[in-house]
Image 1: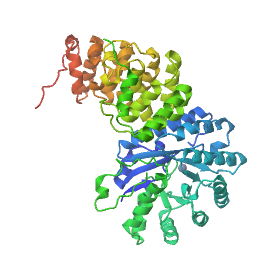
Image 2 (image 1 turned 90 degrees about the vertical axis):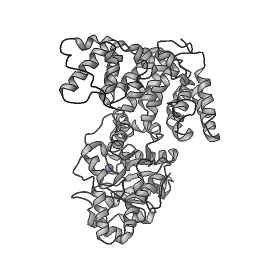
Image 3 (image 1 turned 90 degrees about the horizontal axis):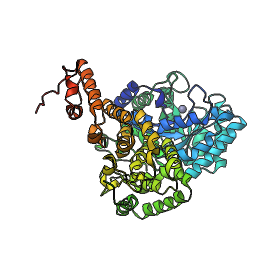
Image 4 (image 1 turned 120 degrees about the vertical axis):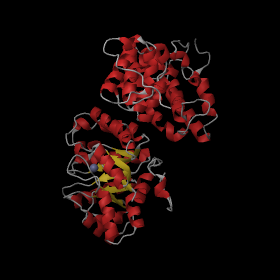
Length: 281
Length: 246
Ligand SMILES: [Zn+2]
């Protein structure tokens, strides 16, 4: 089973995690820029954080046989702090980097006017930088937040196939599918979404444009959830190709729209044997 | 010994033979923007790999196409001296790993070294006539040497570091290479700059490793053996270069 985790915060994981992920079949990850738990108070600390997403973390990942890319943005939580607004001025130079495959995580946390403004500004930056966008949906009042996110995307002029709406559940998946955006699901140990519910959703909505991630970070989370979803899919009667579609081809197709996905070393020959090779790029 | 060639011409000749039409056009435009407004380098520098390619550059061993293109962009900067050093630090500071390595490699070129010669003149203590950076790139070298990224450390110990780092800093840089596993063959000017104090530091390091029952990297011995007296000092007699096997 080859796995591309399209949303995982490796900066907060240990080298043991990298080892276990590689063993489980993970060969590529995307680490979206997000909140760090402890709020930041100046754009400089964001610059340092972006640098680590582009420098140290891909280097660390490569030592465990895993390709690491990232998405860059001012996240909705910190968009509300006026001290962080200067991050928007730093974004153009960071969005130009090779390792950046989307603008993200953008979207809503509490749906404030500040969040509206920063969300829209960053979708405009995505168009300018010719990058897709990765949208976080809020934990509170999720359905409203998802609907409003889809409205903002529509108004931005960014094509729906270049947008991934993440952290979906049974109540929000249909509107995203209908809008033509990619559907992301974060599978957690005890909240939000588990592997059995995920399989049920896949049965109902199919595998097309569906991405599954572990969203593992510094909170309670499990970087092997992608693998566990793959196994649950097989047990429920999905084929190995279906699993490959969800856990590899779909993330490659979505982030491949950036033209910057580099999976050269992440695609060891053993995975090719007898398979068709699909690559974004 | 000083260089008699022009680094700009060397880079352009090598790039000319490699870039396709699209890459050539991109580079020409980018050079124009940078020459007109130095700060523009921050916006064009990241795209050099995607626009020009990342493969090895024929005719310039150890250089890739994107590194050469980036060095060419930096040579187009109108600044010199301290302002040049400050702007280079910004390019490095906001750069990803590939960009940082390119800045580090370009330091010698901006100091007038001929990239085709691997900066040998600078590493050997010469001063090229075209240099306009002087010691103002040292903060970049120091930053890279503080990281734990072996790619950056290896790029930092090039001819520019050999030409400009103070003795104590140079020794620490060599020791860092040994610690993180950067081969000493990567250290430019090592022959010229390896002194008795460096030999002592490496002999002490070898002793520590031996006491801990760990291997000693083979490449420390040639430096140590140039000052055999450091092995005779008290406390170091139990360190010996192991007999070569096979
Ligand atoms: Zn996240």
